[in-house]
Image (cartoon, rainbow, N blue to C red; front, top):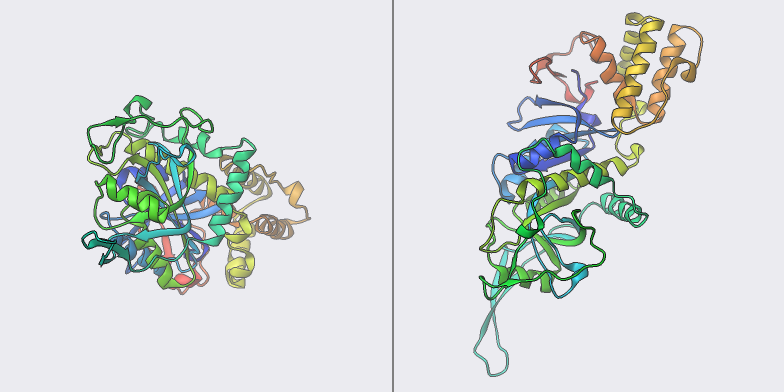
Length: 426
């Protein structure tokens, strides 16, 4: 398989194997790659019409999230947005049913995005005749999330209002994963913040759909420590509108801020309440719902904003692809190729007719040119490249025969070839 690192505009980062497994089942045609001079391993695939690169952190934590994301942005220089997808502790609000976060819900980083609550200073303040009190003040907040992805979230919310919730159907894709089934709601127990052994009831929320995740929007708190303090959790809610607690978001935000041209978004499934009763029971399902929403969100992004076009590929590269189609395929082969492309598109939920009658033209060269143009104008050129290499795996699609090729990984049955000059890979 030959890939072009410049075609990837969207990246997904996960912190746990169960999170990565849930993301991987959302990818169409996933395969593993390793980039020369980059210690990070990647999996690439398609979500809808978009090429997506995904990776798994070697350990949890903001510092590693920054390091891995920085490597990713160097190896895939055209990535415009990184999505951190996985689990988090929820911040319940039983006094306000509409804001109350429960296990299995999804929290999205909007507004200020993410704050690192273990970075700040303690100040002593006077309150009347009371002794001096110690107050923690955060030094600064991280940059806000991607404006483009925030708009995509708002558009998905509009679809939800129209009773369209595509992420719910994608949760079913994870049923084969270990412990990804939704646990019984009877295991969703909320305890009092000041009396850790006292159960308190969840509020009645008429807008909640039984057995399905509810979406929440707001700030996500991030730190390098595992939070099990419900009183601090509640303070973060009341003072900063924090809806979830995790350990990597601030690192992702820092990496994108340093790149200056990349945005981020945090998508978190809720698995506990960041208290002493924390356990793993809901983690598999929380990872599944986060990955399902990520798939729905990416599919909703217009193709033009994330897919490579002919103008972004060199004339030499395009001529190489066109020459392979003309020289290595008969008319019957091209019809079968079109059928494969149409099926791959259908597998990704895209209803597009692809055949030689539709693309038009007389003669082999004109039809091949028209097929290139037809798919490119709709943002689906990668499907043509993938289908071509599936039936002609030895086709020479590199921009120059003199370039050094490096086998860098892949599945057992296939390897990925990257040109020595990564900016001219097709």
